[in-house]
Image 1 (spheres, rainbow, N blue to C red):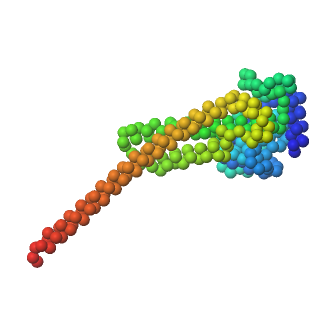
Image 2 (image 1 turned 45 degrees about the vertical axis):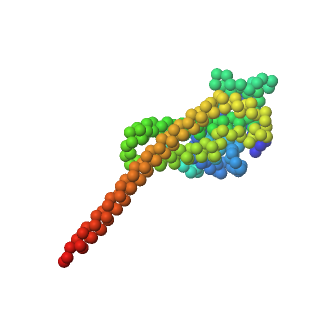
Length: 274
């Protein structure tokens, strides 16, 4: 397989221009119908069609290099059918690549990635950053929807009024925890791919792409919004629990008062002769 992928890289160098296209397909992708899987991420790397390539990640992203759109969609359809929790809406991200002179420097100019060489490892770096960008984009959309609902919750807390939305608030907290788990654990957005430790010279290309796709800045904004949503929801629950606790205390006081009244009532009437 590695020889075939090397042949793909040689073809891409000769072609001198190609497109990398990433798709977020499912919460978890099963690539077993396509071939033998690798441990870790990416889960699979293989040549596709007439000189193209595919790199797939278990957390639901598949990246194509110089593969016709019709063929991409056929493979995506098969992956959606085989994968658990396929998304209704497929999120898409692309990167145009130009191959320059071997003595030139890697650079991004006018949203086009200029490379001085093409290798399997370089394709993997491009796929890694595209995959991270797609997962962040998914959470950007979801969190924007949740963030719009935070203001009325904050108003309830500000005014000291709780309207019995505890289950809904707990759902917010649960969704946020899942987002944090996916970004920090499954996708490892802030971590360098292991490939860089094996090929340190690729860090220049990796950092170039991180800056171009604004991965760090977007991740920081997502983290901040997650923090605000979670803190607002937690405050709401704290106020709600306090109110429930206060209400319970009054119920206990009332029961004690009733018990004392009944005891006094019994003592009072028992003092009269029958």
